[in-house]
Image (cartoon, rainbow, N blue to C red; front, side):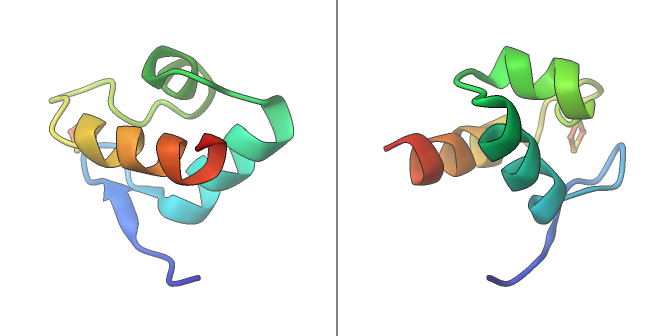
Amino acid sequence: MEDIEICHCNGIMKSEIVKAIKEKGLKTVEEVQDETEAGTVCGGCIPDIEDILSEING
Ligand code: FES
C-alpha cells in the first residue's frame, strides 16, 4: 500500500491511521480522531479518514 500523509495539520500518515483502525477496531471518524489526532485541526482530511474507514470496515 502506498503511504501518504492524510492529515497535513498533524502530519499523520495513512499507515498510522490504518494501523489504529485495525488494531483497535475503530469504526468512526471520532474514534480515529481520539486515537491518532488526525482530523482534529482544520477537518479537511475527514473525508479521507471516512474513505479509509470504509476501505477497511467495508
Ligand atoms: S488536514 Fe487533518 S485536521 Fe487539517
